Length: 504
Image (cartoon, rainbow, N blue to C red; front, side, top):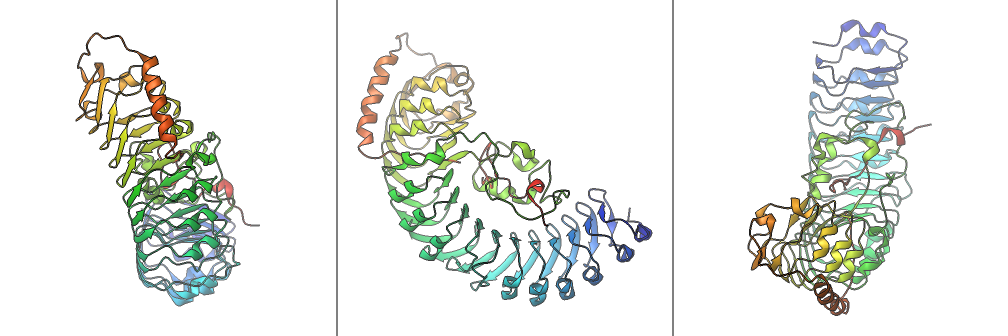
C-alpha cells in the first residue's frame, strides 16, 4: 500500500504521522502542497527510492524518515534548506559520501544518519552547523582527519561509533560535549591529554579500538564522568588510584585489556557507586526536540531507541534483552563494574561489599586469590556476579544468603570448597556450571550432599574479617554499571527521550 497521492490536499495540517503503517513506494510529491506542514513522521515503513530534492523547498522543520528502504546518496540541495531543525534518516540503505553542502543547513539542531552505508571522511563543513546532537554511527566513515568544531558551540551529543575512523583519538569537539561515543573504530596511540578539557563530559565510550599505554591520571580531572568505557583496547599497567577522584562515576568498564596489579586503594571513595539510583535520571540535560513528537525509534515515549542497542551490548547485559525496548519511566542508571579479562591479582578488598547500588560485578578471568569477602553479602542490589576463572579459595561466604536480587552467578574454575549457602535466592542458583571446576563444593544446588558437619558461621565470619583486614592494607574500591545506557543490565541510559526535547 502506498501513501495516497492526493495527501497534499490536507493543506492545513502541521503535523503528519504515518509511521508504522507498512507504506511502500516513494514519498508522494503532493506533500509539497502542504504549506503548513512542520512535522513529517514517516518512520517504520517500507518507503523506497531516493530522497526527493523538493524536500528542501518545503517548510518542514522535523523530517523523520528512519527505518525505511531509501537508497542512493543524499542530494546536496537537501542541506540548503533553512527550515530543517531535525533530520532523522537512520536505518535506511543510503550510501555515498556526505555532501560538502551539509554545512549550509544553518538552523539544524539534530542530525541522525546512523545505520546506513555512508563512506568517506566526515566533511569539515559539518562543524558549521549549530547542532546539539550529531549521530553518524554504524556507517563506513574512514580517515584520520576530523572537523574542527567551535569550542563554544552547543553540540552536546556526538556519536561516531561503529565506523572505520583511525588515527589518534580526536579532541576537536566543543567544550560542552556531554556524550562522546567513539567506540568500535580503529583509533590508536595513547589517550591525548587534551581530552581532559571536556570537563562537562558525562559519557565517554572508547570501547574496541587499538588504544594503548597506561590509563592516564588526567582522566581524574573529568569530574562529571558518569560512564567510562575503555573495554577491549590495549591498555596496560595498573589501574590508577586517581580514578577514585571520579565521585560521579557509576559505570566503569575496563575489561579485555592488559591491566595488571591490584585494585587500587581509594576506590571506596567513588560515592557515585554507592548511592541509591532508583530515581530515573536525566543525565545529559536537555537536547532540543518538540515534546509533542516521538522521534521514531530515536525518541519514543514507550521504548528505548533500538539503534542504541549496541550501548547495552557494550556492557554485556544480554540477559535483560533491552533490544525489545524499555518503558521510559523505567530507564535508570545503575552501578556497573567490569574488570574482567585482564591480569589483575591480589585479594579482593572487604570494602567492595559497601557497593549497595551495584547491579553487576564481573571480575572473571584474572588472577585474584584468597577468600571471597564475606562483605559481599552487603551487595543488596546485585543481579549478576561473575568471579569465575580466578584462584579464589575457601568457602563461599554464608552472607550470600542476603543476595535477594541475584539472578546470574558464576563461581566456576576456582578453588572453592564446602557447603554452598542456601537462602530464598541462592537456592535458585542451581546451574551446575556456576560451580564447575572447584575443589570440593557440595550442596543442594549441585545435588551433592554435604557431610553432616554443623556450619560455623561465626568462625567463617571471623576468618573473613581477618582476611579483609589484611586486604585493606592493599587497597579498597567500589564501582558501577549503560550505557547503558549502551548497557548495563537492569541498567541503561535514556539517550533520546521526547519529553526532554524542546525548541523554542
